[in-house]
Image 1 (tube, one colour):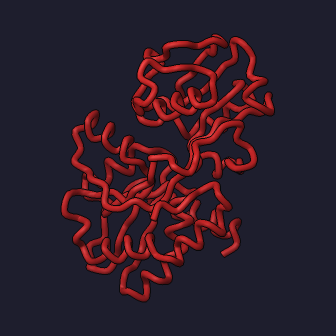
Image 2: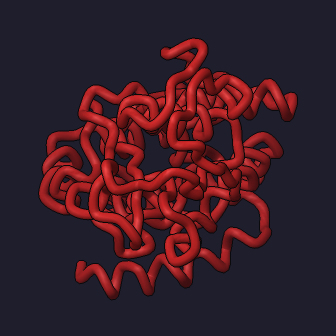
Image 3: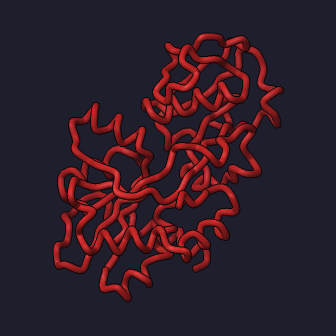
Length: 264
């Protein structure tokens, strides 16, 4: 499917994310996802699942909170958009009971700028925007440490916060913002740490455009997530098999050219 047509389809599907209840006809499987790349990957497996008797319904969200809440409330069967560190923090802070079913892909987090072409050019006192929730905020700080801009008190802690910065030699000024808004800050800040799904949605290419990026060994695998025991549902079993198939691996590698990496 042409990318423009696919994105138009996903925009229509996003309307379904505003409400409604789960269809329980034994064939329909509802999956919450962000538009890029998750919903695109799901669209690629719809024909295969249809042959298996599964009617895949994709509900597109532009945030990381409502998908999990709707799965917890059994309005949606499963979600596909998040990493385990994010899920763990979400459960702890929200009192939810979600569990990871299977890992599918990695989206390397990147540092982007419209003012500077290299990390070395980032000046003293530069303004840096990072995600405002603990798991992705900590992930952003780890990448800034890897890039040599800061050091952390615990250099391997994935949940480091701004209070955990040990040294900040360039006196960087931080803004913590909602992840979906970060691409829109690029005209205002010196550097923005952006999750790849939001970067791709903003027509940024992580391989080409990021000044610094996580390597292929990033532990931040994106999982299919649901309630305990839901992974035994035959529809979910078929979903996971399709997402982790050779055909999906080839789709990810060819479609995203290194911006998204298979994790299987």
